[in-house]
Image (cartoon, rainbow over all chains, first blue to last red; front, side, top):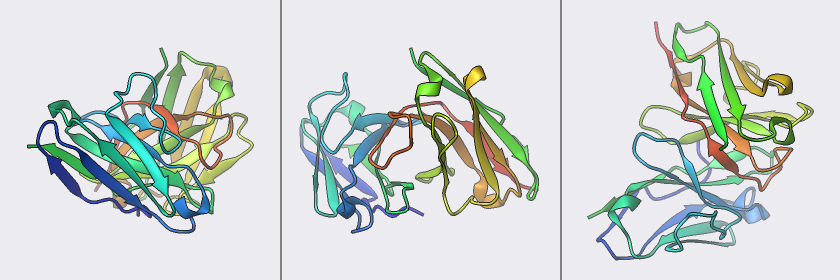
Length: 110
Length: 123
């Protein structure tokens, strides 16, 4: 049972900008815990995309960016490409010190 | 190259037990906390359990507390998940994931992940 809420799906044409929200509460994101994002391509394991709210690991294109404010976080993809079609999950911690994931968002490139 | 390879999944009847393993290579295993994360068919990710580098700190999701036991053998570079009293709702792909720190501290993230091992609980 996910405690972080994401939209089930977002879509955009190639080259467009899409954003994915991750809404939590005062017991997780709002408590100051960092938010991280993972990309899961079809049939593969999740891969780290953004860590510490807004940092990109080496190799992740700079068209992926993250931000956090209050009890929410966002992932933005600018210059959407066909290869970005995947599921995206946010992750944080809650006050019981358990890791928590978002509900997941499917990105479709039109 | 960091590699995590899960094994031990399969078809099991409700109420029975199963033990998953995760073989780690490419990094100093006993420097890092480790986790199990699962994904039910067509569903999202759910954190299951985490263990610190020296097994001194362990945590479980409420959904598995009292039924699952995480452990590690640093000499064998291996992580384990003993799953007892299995239920249909435990059916999922179970991933092993490396923490970025030595303890599973709030704020940490998981990188990388293994490819997963499928557990199916059905009569």
